[in-house]
Image 1 (cartoon, rainbow, N blue to C red):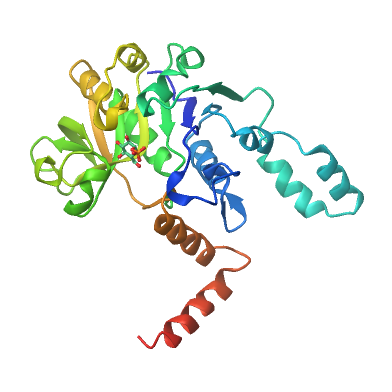
Image 2 (image 1 turned 45 degrees about the vertical axis):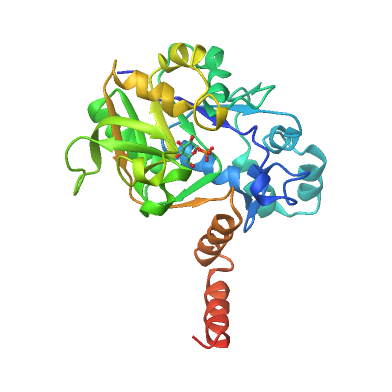
Amino acid sequence: MKKIRKAVLPVAGFGTRVLPATKTIPKEMLPVVDRPALQYVVDEAREAGIEHFVFVTGRNKGAIEDYFDRAYELEYSLRQKGKTEIYEALDKDTPEAGTMSFVRQQSALGLGHAIWCARDVIGDDPFAILLPDVLVKAKTSCLAQMVDAYNDVGGNIIAVDQVPHERVSSYGVIAPKGTAEGQRLIEMSGMVEKPKTEDAPSNLKITGRYILQPEIMDILKTQAAGAGGEIQLTDAMATLMKLQSFHAYEYEGEDYDCGSKYGYFEAVLAYAIDHPEIGEQAVELLKTRHKSLGV
Ligand code: G1P
């Protein structure tokens, strides 16, 4: 079984749900306390053994490429001033040369199309996809949990989590085979992108973490537009599922949709509470606010 070494991170989206913050800043670069949201996703992937990152970018996303480069003047100045700790923290996050690729998606044709744009870099390797809108806070990184499961069963694995029924229409939703209760690895009979609540086959939503075999690229090549008039990854996966082993994996952890105002706020709160520098203060602040709200 081939190791999962590569990950695709689609970062071409506009971030319309958090405008005007995203008018000049890519949504993936919005800070969650003191790190860009994207850095948490890269850390999650690294913990899962990912060695090469493929970013599918678009216009006005140059800040992402710069972020992963050296900031020569800044680093020089930090060293000159003896701010060694800050310099070392920056240095630690700088990727090794040659471990990041950037490909352009010139037109916003959908998530499936974005993934297809990475086909030449992926080649014949199984690969991971992480949607950087979604942060998953977990003891063991979500993708690392999935890679563990992959090492047992192989094939294709997608992360799922339960949502209230009234929210299923915002997501891809899976149809589990039989009862999915009490097990993390779930057999599936189908999946559908953004179903109407009444048509949804379950309340297990696809969370934005995937391990897929390279054959998905052949399917995406001719995939017709689906929900919202976009080329959907979910539709291509539904086809692949008929040809190869496919499992859903109910991971352990909390996910935050940083592409929405509320999800972003929740993420900032969750990461602030656990932050080594400001965690205690954040908790005190919340307690005081809670009291002042009179609840
Ligand atoms: C995408 C996927 C969807 C998935 C969701 C997770 O939708 O198409 O299947 O459930 O991400 O966040 P989007 O949020 O891009 O509309």
